Amino acid sequence: MKNLTPMDRQQLIEDIQLKSASGEESLGTSIRRLRLEITGLDQDSFAKMCKLTTKTLSTLENGRGNPTINTLDGILKPFGLAMTLGSLRHKPIKPISQHVEEPRRKRGASPKRQTAALQTASSRAEAE
Image (cartoon, rainbow, N blue to C red; front, side):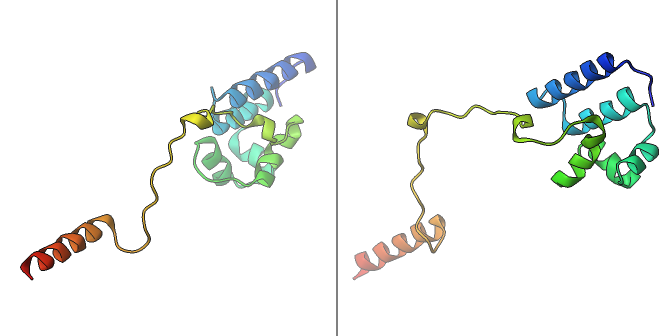
Protein backbone atom coordinates (compact mmCIF):
# COMPACT_ATOMS: atom_id res chain seq x y z
CA MET A 1 0.00 0.00 0.00
CA LYS A 2 1.14 3.52 -0.71
CA ASN A 3 1.97 5.76 2.21
CA LEU A 4 -0.42 8.67 1.74
CA THR A 5 -1.55 10.99 4.49
CA PRO A 6 -5.26 10.65 5.26
CA MET A 7 -5.78 14.15 3.80
CA ASP A 8 -3.92 13.31 0.56
CA ARG A 9 -5.81 10.04 0.27
CA GLN A 10 -9.17 11.77 0.72
CA GLN A 11 -8.31 14.48 -1.83
CA LEU A 12 -7.25 11.85 -4.35
CA ILE A 13 -10.46 9.86 -3.84
CA GLU A 14 -12.54 13.04 -4.23
CA ASP A 15 -10.69 13.90 -7.46
CA ILE A 16 -11.37 10.42 -8.84
CA GLN A 17 -15.05 10.66 -7.81
CA LEU A 18 -15.45 14.09 -9.41
CA LYS A 19 -13.84 13.11 -12.71
CA SER A 20 -15.85 9.91 -12.87
CA ALA A 21 -19.17 11.61 -12.06
CA SER A 22 -18.54 14.40 -14.58
CA GLY A 23 -17.65 11.95 -17.33
CA GLU A 24 -14.05 13.13 -17.65
CA GLU A 25 -12.87 9.62 -16.79
CA SER A 26 -14.40 6.27 -17.55
CA LEU A 27 -15.26 3.85 -14.78
CA GLY A 28 -12.32 1.67 -15.82
CA THR A 29 -9.90 4.58 -15.59
CA SER A 30 -11.25 5.48 -12.17
CA ILE A 31 -10.80 1.91 -10.94
CA ARG A 32 -7.25 1.84 -12.33
CA ARG A 33 -6.45 5.14 -10.60
CA LEU A 34 -7.79 3.85 -7.28
CA ARG A 35 -5.64 0.74 -7.64
CA LEU A 36 -2.44 2.47 -8.67
CA GLU A 37 -2.54 5.89 -7.03
CA ILE A 38 -4.02 4.91 -3.70
CA THR A 39 -2.97 1.32 -3.11
CA GLY A 40 -0.01 0.98 -5.45
CA LEU A 41 -0.94 -2.68 -5.91
CA ASP A 42 -0.51 -4.74 -9.07
CA GLN A 43 -3.64 -6.14 -10.72
CA ASP A 44 -3.21 -9.62 -9.24
CA SER A 45 -2.93 -8.39 -5.62
CA PHE A 46 -5.74 -5.87 -6.02
CA ALA A 47 -8.02 -8.47 -7.65
CA LYS A 48 -7.46 -10.85 -4.74
CA MET A 49 -8.20 -8.05 -2.27
CA CYS A 50 -11.51 -7.37 -4.07
CA LYS A 51 -12.28 -11.09 -4.46
CA LEU A 52 -12.12 -10.92 -8.27
CA THR A 53 -10.08 -12.71 -10.89
CA THR A 54 -7.23 -10.78 -12.46
CA LYS A 55 -8.94 -11.19 -15.85
CA THR A 56 -12.16 -9.60 -14.53
CA LEU A 57 -10.25 -6.65 -13.09
CA SER A 58 -8.28 -6.20 -16.31
CA THR A 59 -11.48 -6.30 -18.34
CA LEU A 60 -13.06 -3.63 -16.13
CA GLU A 61 -10.03 -1.36 -16.18
CA ASN A 62 -9.94 -1.54 -19.97
CA GLY A 63 -13.58 -0.50 -20.31
CA ARG A 64 -14.88 -3.86 -21.40
CA GLY A 65 -17.29 -6.14 -19.61
CA ASN A 66 -20.53 -5.47 -17.85
CA PRO A 67 -19.97 -5.56 -14.08
CA THR A 68 -22.77 -5.99 -11.59
CA ILE A 69 -23.37 -3.42 -8.87
CA ASN A 70 -22.11 -5.98 -6.34
CA THR A 71 -18.84 -6.37 -8.24
CA LEU A 72 -18.35 -2.60 -8.38
CA ASP A 73 -19.24 -2.21 -4.72
CA GLY A 74 -16.67 -4.91 -3.88
CA ILE A 75 -14.01 -2.88 -5.66
CA LEU A 76 -15.07 0.46 -4.18
CA LYS A 77 -15.79 -0.64 -0.59
CA PRO A 78 -12.14 -0.60 0.60
CA PHE A 79 -12.03 3.09 -0.36
CA GLY A 80 -15.23 3.98 1.46
CA LEU A 81 -17.12 4.33 -1.82
CA ALA A 82 -20.21 2.72 -3.29
CA MET A 83 -22.15 2.91 -6.52
CA THR A 84 -25.05 5.32 -6.21
CA LEU A 85 -27.42 7.10 -8.53
CA GLY A 86 -25.61 10.32 -7.69
CA SER A 87 -22.47 9.01 -9.39
CA LEU A 88 -24.17 8.59 -12.74
CA ARG A 89 -23.38 11.21 -15.32
CA HIS A 90 -26.34 13.45 -16.08
CA LYS A 91 -27.13 13.96 -19.75
CA PRO A 92 -29.46 16.90 -20.45
CA ILE A 93 -32.56 16.05 -22.46
CA LYS A 94 -34.53 18.23 -24.81
CA PRO A 95 -37.56 20.01 -23.32
CA ILE A 96 -40.77 18.08 -23.90
CA SER A 97 -42.12 20.70 -26.31
CA GLN A 98 -39.23 19.98 -28.70
CA HIS A 99 -39.84 16.25 -28.83
CA VAL A 100 -41.44 15.28 -32.13
CA GLU A 101 -43.08 11.92 -32.21
CA GLU A 102 -42.60 10.00 -35.39
CA PRO A 103 -45.74 8.48 -36.86
CA ARG A 104 -46.21 4.90 -35.77
CA ARG A 105 -45.80 2.28 -38.39
CA LYS A 106 -48.68 -0.10 -38.84
CA ARG A 107 -47.99 -3.63 -37.77
CA GLY A 108 -47.56 -6.12 -40.53
CA ALA A 109 -45.72 -5.77 -43.78
CA SER A 110 -42.69 -3.56 -44.13
CA PRO A 111 -43.20 -0.11 -45.72
CA LYS A 112 -41.64 -1.35 -48.99
CA ARG A 113 -44.05 -4.27 -49.16
CA GLN A 114 -47.01 -2.03 -48.30
CA THR A 115 -46.04 0.35 -51.14
CA ALA A 116 -45.58 -2.52 -53.58
CA ALA A 117 -48.95 -3.98 -52.59
CA LEU A 118 -50.66 -0.62 -53.17
CA GLN A 119 -49.02 -0.24 -56.59
CA THR A 120 -50.07 -3.76 -57.57
CA ALA A 121 -53.64 -3.12 -56.40
CA SER A 122 -53.88 0.15 -58.36
CA SER A 123 -52.45 -1.55 -61.48
CA ARG A 124 -55.13 -4.27 -61.24
CA ALA A 125 -57.86 -1.64 -60.79
CA GLU A 126 -56.69 0.22 -63.91
CA ALA A 127 -56.61 -3.02 -65.93
CA GLU A 128 -60.23 -3.82 -65.10
